[in-house]
Image (cartoon, rainbow, N blue to C red; front, side):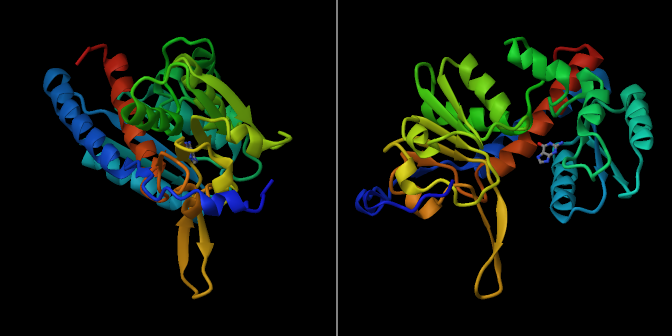
Length: 305
Ligand code: GUN
């Protein structure tokens, strides 16, 4: 799907594309959540608790779940980590989820994906009680989102939506192009943007001319896991670009660097606004996980504050 940058990319120079500072936005959101967690505790004598389950030793997943635990503590919530061996069976994992579903100290449950081969992510995700499914990936919450009903919304698309609304205000009538149709990001993102009144196009692996579609987007959300896929000349001048991708690449000097799915140096000359990698969408995902855990605790405990 990768196309060479066109001559046009080099000729359109707008180095002033505004950087969307997801790190600062997430820090503010986490601070607000921490205040609300204290108020919730004062009112109900309950501290929201989040259980994170990691199966196996995927190094990237280990970093993600450690960060989740750290931020959960920072927000004043309780973090329960379950680090299980690669050899864990489906029955063992389902049994753990069953216990967490019934544990009154736990208000949110997240099973880190991807799971090792042999474990069925659909069955595992659907085993989490919908009220504690703070990832919003189970069929009940995904169905609610598809039907436009209130429910728990997946953290990454929720974070992207918050950034877009804070940058652009109302989104009604804008054409949003999403590249990537995963259950984790692309599909829920499409449903959220549709609910905001956007006209939504979803491009995916079988789409014929993704670049031509991308060029129509007032909003361009890219979540493919294919680093550098989106070139500068794929971007409508002035568009708001949200780069969900995050890949660690090796440099010729032996060092490594995190990069997104968008060729940032090219895109920054065309976009009106763009999220950097790192420091854009990534921090929002964890802040939204905390947001969803507090909201779940409120619903489970039955209070409004
Ligand atoms: N792996 C990468 N992102 C996510 C996420 O948002 N939730 C879960 N459960 N696993 C992930």
